[in-house]
Amino acid sequence: MRLFLALIPPPALRRRLAELAERAHARLGGRRVPDDSLHLTLAFLGERPTAQAEALARWVEERPIPEGEWRLDAWGSFRRPGIVWVGSRTPDRALTELQAALWQDLERHGVAGRPSGFIPHVTLLRRAHRLDTAEMSPPDLAWPYRQLALVRSFTDQDRARYQTLARSPLS
Ligand code: 3AM
View 1 (tube, rainbow, N blue to C red):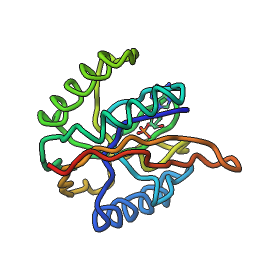
View 2: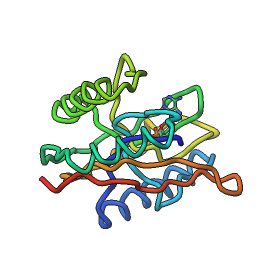
View 3: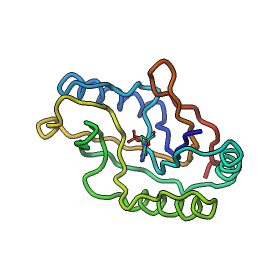
């Protein structure tokens, strides 16, 4: 199964992110990420056999993450798949360290595929028609977090769906 590690926004923040997605969609078009799918990917693990997914779920359930708060203050985009996102203007140190620590553990679990860079972002639009976010007023949101989720991604009637398989203990 296709897996990734993510932070899941608390409900109030999810609503704010959904408002931003609506605003971005009205201006830039494309496909809006459904509200219940909004997340921050920390590590994409790719396709994994069931036995390994179960081992990874046990690992996540025993691995607290340091509590933190991510400040979202910038719009951004990735040209190739037409992704519009919100994230931060300057790299967030705590998230960068968390991502690196997670990949160290993942490699011990035999998961390869650590990316060379990491830009924390919340994808709001896919296949956007335009990527010009420069004139949109910048977001100003705080994301308090203290729990990691192991998420399965699958396709159901042409729609990407996510299912949380495991959560880390609360820090
Ligand atoms: O968190 P976002 O939405 O930016 O694009 C996929 C999504 O990113 C990404 O992993 C997240 C959960 O699906 N993803 C999908 N396939 C990928 C791949 N082969 C990938 N990231 C890296 N390599």
